[in-house]
Structures are given as structure tokens and as C-alpha cells.
Amino acid sequence: MLIRNRKPWDQLRESAATPEAVYLDRRRLMKLAGFGAVALIAGCDGRDGEARAEGEGAKPAADPSARFYPAKRNEAYALDRPVTDEQWASTYNNFYEFGTHKQIWANADKLPLRPWSVVIDGMVAKPATIAIDDLIGRFALEERLYRHRCVEAWSMAVPWTGFPLRALMDAVEPLSSAKYVRFETFNDPRIASGQRQNSFYPWPYVEGLTMAEAANDLAFLVTGVYGKPAAPQFGAPLRLALPWKYGFKSIKSIVRITFTDRQPENFWQTLGPDEYGFWANVNPQVPHPRWSQAYERVLGTDERRPTLLFNGYGELVADLYKGLEREALYM
Ligand SMILES: Nc1nc2c(c(=O)[nH]1)N[C@H]1C(S)=C(S)[C@@H](COP(=O)(O)O)O[C@H]1N2
Ligand SMILES: [Mo]
Image 1 (cartoon, rainbow, N blue to C red):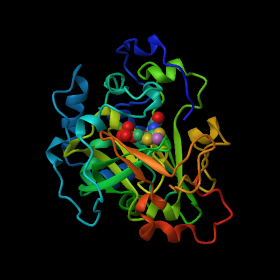
Image 2 (image 1 turned 180 degrees about the vertical axis):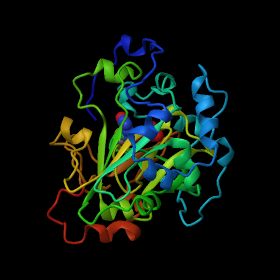
Image 3 (image 1 turned 90 degrees about the vertical axis):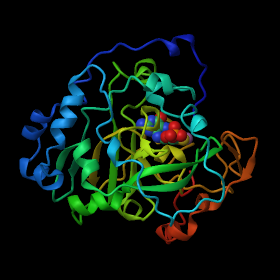
């Protein structure tokens, strides 16, 4: 990533301002969204009242989705290495909204996770604005052990909880004109210290996938990790996990999912087009312009491991890239 000096003021405490720009209340959401669409995907099962009550207090007592954890593990996704120690994975993070260093977990704790809603729009038959707890309640959660390979050449192995992105796509019915899915993170400099300090970055953080990539079995929407609701630094309350791609594709704290016919230009591509591209599939043989990708440092250990093509998931994803050999598939 772009290397910046860490400044003492990176550590300044946040104000506790209410982020109205991102978190609309449920009543307004029902008015804004097509009511039918919301009812159709989200249902009205009474859980929403619970979420609202939690959201109105200064500090929510408990995560309203806690009862869904731990979810049953899907054994189809096996690891070739131990799961990374939770302490390491939750204190060594990339989340530029909260700073350019790895110790952003304390800053990220300022992110209010409720109320939270996700807008689904663009080329889709059933656009909707969905409260996060309605979304979580709508899909069967499962646990998957996935490897994660950051473009900076460190890696981890994590027990994510969530549901396949394809399940969401099936529910909202993208139109045949849609060629890509675009994901967007919240943008609120009052909450996110990194968005204040690096105001010249192209916020909000954006990522994108082709429809075929999004529909692949591996593409996973994450709500929890280590058998419980995800902490903010992991990208709560909703993030992607795309284990065959460099970590920057796995966008955190999603507020909008848009179906489009135009290839989304992602955050890192906008910042450094010579170093980061759209596809970003893991490949040990294609170096980053400033470092090798042949090996990875395994987080929480002294181990240096050879990196695998598609991060070891080639059997499941290599077919997605047939005929695209001329594209910059590995940056
Ligand atoms: N919104 C947002 N999503 C993001 C990032 C970010 O800075 N902002 N960093 C990415 C990068 S570079 C990596 S490696 C992973 C890190 O996930 P982790 O902190 O859970 O390990 O999140 C990705 N998703
Ligand atoms: Mo990364």
C-alpha cells in the first residue's frame, strides 16, 4: 500500500458525533425505499424493534445478532494451516478509514454498528434498503475457514461467519444488463479518523466484482468472525471475504451494493493505478512493482510460506478467468 509516516495525531481520540449521513433510522428508510421491496426481502418479523431499541441507547448493551452465533461450520472449506490466533487477527488490521497503520482497532471501536442499513440498487429487479438485522435474519449463517492474503505479503487464516453473496443476489434478482457488482463503504469523517486525516483519498472505499465472480461459491458476505459478531476493526457489520484475491478486494463495513454495467474503479486503483488493478487475483509469480509476491509472512508466527496461485483456491475459481489472459489479472 502507499507508505506514509505515522503521525502522533493519528492517535487522537474521536468525537462521538452521530453519523446521520450514513445511518438513517428505520422509519425514514421505509419511506425512502420501495416499501414492497423492503417487506419482500426483509420481512417484518418483529426483530427490527429490538434493533431499534438497541440503537437508541448511547452504548448498545449487546449485539442484536448475537443469538445466531456460533454458526455451523461448512466443512467444504478446509485449511492447510492453523487458524490465526484471534488476538493477532483482531489487533493487526487494514482499515484505512481509521488510519494507515495496523493498530486501528481502537479507532475502529468508534464505529456505531446499529442502526445500520445496506442499500441495494442499480440494475436489479428488487432494489431495497435493508436494516442489517433484517439482512442477517434473512439468510442462514455458516462458518467457513478461509485463508487471507494481503497484497502487502502477510497472510492469516480466519473462521468467518456469514452467507454466500450469491444468496443475496438470488433474493434481489439482478437484471441481465448487470455485468458487475459495486460495493461501497460508509463515508463519515466525523467518525473515521483516517477519512479526516487523509481527506484527499478517494473516499468512500469502493470495490467491485464481475457477476460471475460474485456468484462464485467462494464469494462470502461476512457478518461475524471467531464464532461471534464481528468487531468493528474486521469490517462489521458486513464485509466481503474473497480468499482468492488480494485482501484489499475484501471491502469492509458495506453500506451500498450496486448492480451496474460499468466496471467499478476501486479505491486502490484510483490511488495507485500503476500498482493496483480491478482483478487482483493472488499470484506468486507476478510481483508488485515494489516487492515480490512469492512468499507471505504468516501473521502471529515466524513462518514465511510460499504463496499459492489464487491463494490455493484455483480449483474453484480458475475457470472465471478463461479467455481473459490479456487482462492484468494479478494486480
Ligand atoms: N473499507 C475498507 N475495506 C478494507 C480495507 C480498508 O482500508 N477499508 N482494507 C483492505 C485490506 S488491504 C485488507 S488486507 C483487509 C484486511 O482485513 P482484516 O483487517 O480483517 O485483516 O481488508 C480490506 N478491506
Ligand atoms: Mo491488504
